[in-house]
Length: 291
Image 1 (cartoon, helix red, strand yellow):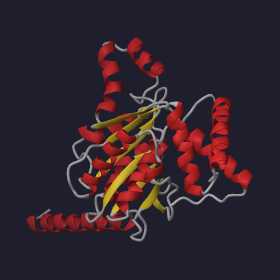
Image 2: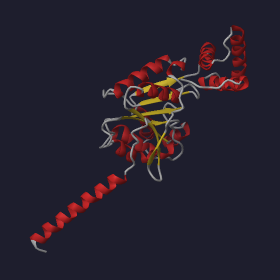
Image 3: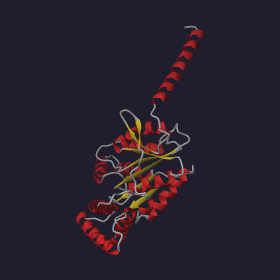
């Protein structure tokens, strides 16, 4: 092959590569400019717009003042283009972890281009593809949110998450932050960690590999069981928000019934309080509409 033919072949290959990149870009999932919340779905990859996010207003979240202040400040800085940390919200069930993420987003997004994108735990392996799509949206900032994050058995998708959070060559785009909620502080089941310890050549290194995933989150916020006073404060706040039990006698009866409800559930939490209010609203014919 002559030098001229070789140059022509190189040029053809260059053009073919460019066309392939353009084709891939045109097929990539797009973000609807009219919405500020999406669910990331796979098979095929796409952004499903969420017109109205199911959330509780920030002022109704009781008993988690420190966690609220910390997450709000972190998110506000991120929305302004300032440095901010990935956040892990961990702790007891029903204590307001996911509610806080959605409430903070809703409050800040009212005055910014902050967008919430939820990814399901079972789709974490597609996280690099999701970030690739978001990296093209330079004028918007995204919270990628995974609710109830945990890993069981022989799952290995946590390694992809570790690389994305900090350790990979590409890392994550500047306009993206990752928030996750979990019932576990270290995201791994105790059995999973113990199995790694028992089968590894170097048990301590195997355990560190598992536990270090949580260390990739710069902001850790713990959520714990609440006392009776806080539980009743939640009941009163929710009741006031929907116009339930406005008289003092009705308020006293509502609190008494709320305590009985918590006993039947075996716990006191924001979720239990909200479920009680829903039950009472339905029985009283009161429609629930929070703003």
